[in-house]
Length: 390
Image (tube, rainbow, N blue to C red; front, top):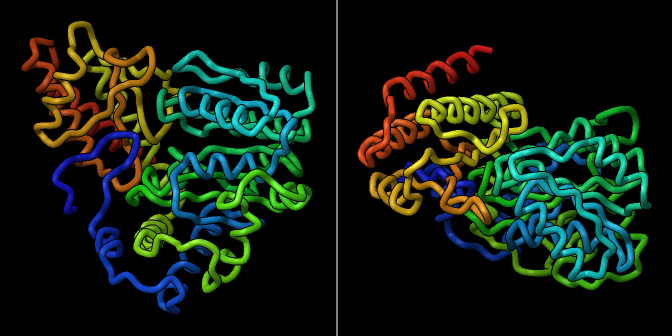
């Protein structure tokens, strides 16, 4: 890779050379047939990866933009939204809901834990909800949502199931035609960004709508949006040679290459790789007395929030690692200074993560903490090997 650092944060994530090469290709007109062909390929790859029966929308913007698109195109002011939150980014839906005048209820887990499906079922019985949002992997806590249990509950109560896949898509299963428990129990909307598990630089927002979600937009005469209105984007997704707003030409090149890498690896193999990486990192760091915030059964394959042992100065610790080319993120909210976050997704390699485990241990030792580096690295290697053979 051309990268000088191991960018092991929850996103952006490491970018491989072929994606950089695509990004640096000649910028062409957005109506140039050569670009149109690449844009169409990116759309088709996204549809295959998410297996939607509806449409995908690829736009210049961030994950926050497509969160907004998911809500504003399905809900009218006064509609009721249920937010299932496993951390900071689940909570962001509440701010969006307030901005657009929705009635809102929030089920918020203690950080590090999942929301109980029993609590979800109880809440769904209290009101009629137009939609329910679930963050598949919350970037702040490293907690994954149990879609196998949550999606059927949401659909049985007649609500649209909106999945925030920003820190999950292409690393965790998000098949939009998979019925989780009988007919009509599939996901309605998946939204994501280019810069996390897909492994492309930031700048592209992606949101996929099922036929039911598209029908929800058609049922509303008008919505309080223009750029975010999927009705304005539908003609372009159907025929990328048409114009609504200028697409990010070079980012589309990069995205199409990133999606090619995903498809070439294969989704089942890719899901297994992320599971192995996450478990190996968390198991190895426990050797240093670093305890993951989430219990293993609740932990996301894409990133982990790791609590420090006593006596570690967070800014100093991460700055020291940064000087060695290992880039980690601090924790958010009440965990700031008490934990760090490490990404293990996208184009990240086992070699990069093993190097990080080693240097984390060495930095702990240099700071006066006990750390059995050889044992931690051995645990990492053993866990990776065991899971890879399954």
